[in-house]
Image (cartoon, rainbow, N blue to C red):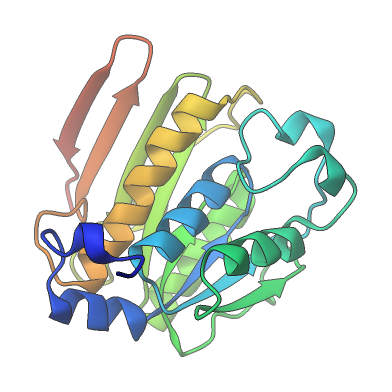
Length: 222
């Protein structure tokens, strides 16, 4: 028996081999990013680069699933790495304590990037880097009980800056359930893209209203 036995009916040996051979960067290890990171580790990803310059604070603990009260004041990326390696010690993980800004670079070995950020300035910078480096980008954002998920694949989808042109800062309202739903979808979306599944969110926007349990997928014009 091993950690992946229960998902053999869903993922083929070829799928699992692709995941083991892939490294993904997660930008932001907060409410969304902690869920995505844990999900990818449990799903079988081979490597992660965790990027976040923030420290754990008391207000994070209502939704950021990798941290405890003992972690307050510690760097999120470093604590997340420690917790993830406790789940699977055969996954390669680097913790980068830095902010996404124009001098930031995405290593060539990274297959794709997860946008789990909480500010639009860094999101646009990250999206431009993914476009330039020809890396897929899985985005999610939320405000209160509402959120969205979409994926960008250079040459196969609209550009991030066109889809989210004029985006305004969200209210700083977030709770566990919306982070868990959106982050879980982001993690599975990464798996779908790496495994070559066409039923993904490239060129589509998933809208989520958790108050009414309304989910809607709309096409994005290129």
